[in-house]
Amino acid sequence: MGRDKFFDLLKSNKLLVRKTKRNTYTTMSKHHYRRYANLVKGFSPVKAHELWVSDITYIPLKERFAYLFLITDAYSRKIVGYHVSDDMKVSSAAVALKQALAQKPPATIVIHHSDRGIQYCSNEYVRLLNEANAMISMTESGDPLENAIAERVNGILKTELISSCYSDIQAASIHISRCITIYNYRRRHSSLNWQIPAIVHEQKGPQIRRWKNYYYSHKLKEAAMLKT
Image: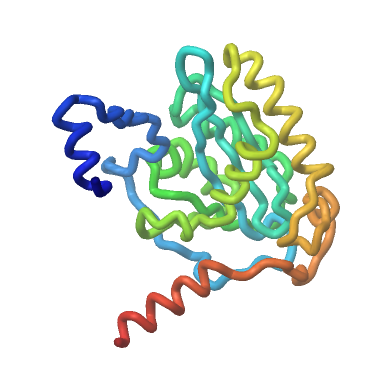
């Protein structure tokens, strides 16, 4: 019996395992707030606080989910702002932003890049960025490669450092704080020539990268396919 016939047999006898759908979306892009253009296409920062990338990821608790708001410096890969919250409200995103802004030199103009989620487009969040003379940049589609650094940082934290589940939000907050300290001050990156984010954060100039630019390769392949 072939595979398809076998699955038909299981289905007819109600033996197929049901697929579970996880409703843990962290991007709510259907809203009336202004969306901003993507300002970072082809942009490579040469020092800290030139470009920040932001994202939200879910954190499994015993009976529900919490959310981790992250702001990462694209040059050094150092996490400059974060907050673990029970909710995805704008006020929770603002906590991480205020933490990042407190580190930024007053004269520096930073580009804040994010998806088009309601938190980042909201009046309160945009006001904080405008007051800090920050430039606002957003993804133009749902393609995660448009915010690849933020996605990569999320992946490192969740696969290498953050636990798969926490008993409650207090335990999550304490442990994630330790994880981010380890990430910033001990974890070496191939994209930084195997240096530590906190050390690179004090440097200037282009970094030697030990990885392929998959986003650029993907776009070249996509363009070639369109031509044919």
